[in-house]
Amino acid sequence: MRERACKFGSHGGLVGILCEPDATAPGSPAAVFANVGLNHRVGPSRSWVECARALAREGFASLRFDLSGLGDSEPRSDALSDSERAARDLQEALDYLAERGLARRFVLIGNCSGVDSLHTLAGRDPRVAGAVYIDGYAYRNTAFLWRWMLLRWLEPNRWLRYWRFRGMYRSPAATAERPLWKREIPSRDEFGRDLDALVARGVRLLFVFTGGMGLHYNHSSQFYDSFGHKGAVAVTYHPRADHLLTSTRERADVIGRICGFMRSAFPPAES
Amino acid sequence: MHASYFGSPEKPLFGIYSPPCGRVQRDAVVLLCHPAPQEYMRSHWALRRLAARLADEGFHVFRFDYYATGDSAGDSAAGSLEEWRQNVVAALGEARDVSGVRRASVVGFGLGATLAAQAKVRVQDLVLWEPVVSGRAHLAALRSAHERQLAHNLQTPRLPRHGPLFELLGHPLPPALQAELETLELRRPFACAPARILLVAAEARPAYAPLIDAGSGSSARLETVPGEQTGDEPFLMWPAAERRICELLTGAAA
Image 1 (cartoon, one colour):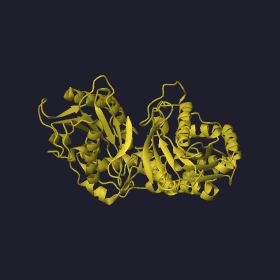
Image 2 (cartoon, rainbow over the protein chains, first blue to last red):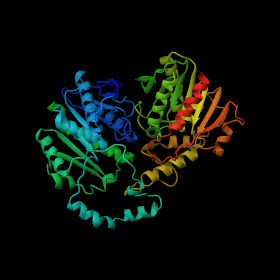
Image 3 (spheres, rainbow over the protein chains, first blue to last red):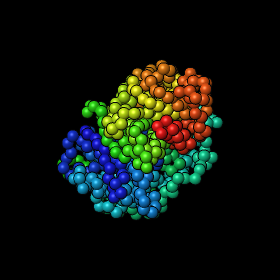
Image 4 (tube, rainbow over the protein chains, first blue to last red):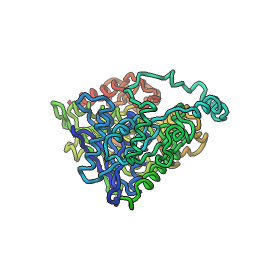
């Protein structure tokens, strides 16, 4: 495996790290990671670095980079919206990899707000062959509400947490401040249509949900119950992991699932 | 801004060099030392902004990731304080090579300040920005931050009360590194033998007293800069401190 720094993009100001395996099967897709919120390209708790290197051991190249104006990348001077600017940056990352002959198809990997640009680009760029959404979009359903209203009060951990962190915990409402940017989250129907289109196009998809999404996702089958596509779309639920994959054990587990998804979705023989 | 890897081929380190971009060009390079590894992500943006501010003032600026942190090589569990001190030495050598200037100053934040002070380098000015004076107290503060950060998570794995912690705030904490941190103490004289020491902090804490001299004109003095430095915010936002550090170095190099 080797890593090298690069600068690219139409304004020449995007900074990233190319991570290349010792040997890549012809036709293998390259993975592309961008920022998680305001965290720079390394990812929270170094998660993108660990994931990129794990993928390199599986034979997949990757690029992790900072969107314009974040991390080490220079801001753009054009007047695009946050989401459109991020999608443009992501597209230029794909252009950079394609122009250098590093890959012709790509798997986009995002966490939290990082899935917004990923989702936009996946829908319009035919070079996107796969996407991994970590805690991206979740939509409550009846089974969610049933668990939320009743079963959660029966969990001993909830009462234990109340006792351990009493006085320390501040509710999200109490700590809410003006957001730094506004996310453009698709409605449930829009997302369902987008998902149908991606599956019809043959885009391989993995959805990862953690316990950090507990206000929106609380059981493993929730995604399939809402949108179907069981067998065509991979879903994995990690209730012990937090949103930023802070626990080293849970992070390793999620990275292992991403590697497994890449192995099965893009085997060398298929390339 | 030039990003590249440097150091040995077995353990390459990631570094970013920012050349002077203002009207004046100073014959001095400033090395920025991140804290590692728990507060690295939190301080990245602040140090990037400080680098840009210093480059605007005509300094050559170099910042880097320690081994086993950030984009540098190494498994996340492979870092040690001794290795990171050697990384400071290697980074300063690289900073001098890429900039072509010999006169160097170092700015370190948190644990990065402590590592810089203890590294065997020769520098003009040493800026200690909220340095870690006691490793044991630092570990206790990180432990508390870990519990606050994960307080909302229903199934948070509990940290052991005693003995090895194994991980802290998302990063592995191998027993050897924990032992190094528990015995870490910042004391003068510093190995880097600076001509001037500037300690920048939100308040004058008793622990800082042995690190500075009495008198405003001394070569080791404290600069208090008001800031919302509670340690709970996910990202360090302290522009007043960045501005003051820049003023201090500019005055020294003018």
